[in-house]
Image 1 (cartoon, helix red, strand yellow):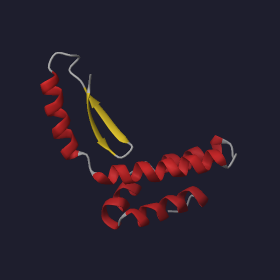
Image 2 (cartoon, rainbow, N blue to C red):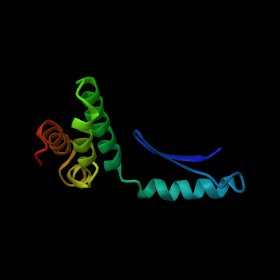
Image 3 (tube, rainbow, N blue to C red):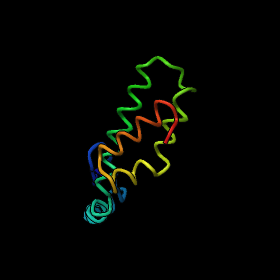
Length: 100
């Protein structure tokens, strides 16, 4: 069974294929220290944006490029430097009209 590092919706499983569960756990603990909480914020924001895009009924070709723009680093940087609301506002601007 893998050791799992979690930050909100972000999960990373670490396994040694059963060779050393203790080593997998140690790696997971180090990885969990590295895993920035801003990733969890971004995962929530992107999940919401994706759900709204799907629910809108618009073709994926229309909203998918904008959703991909949320993953170019600017959203993560906004979450880290300015907080969740600033990141959420950036995501809304990008998803609505592509502006950033």
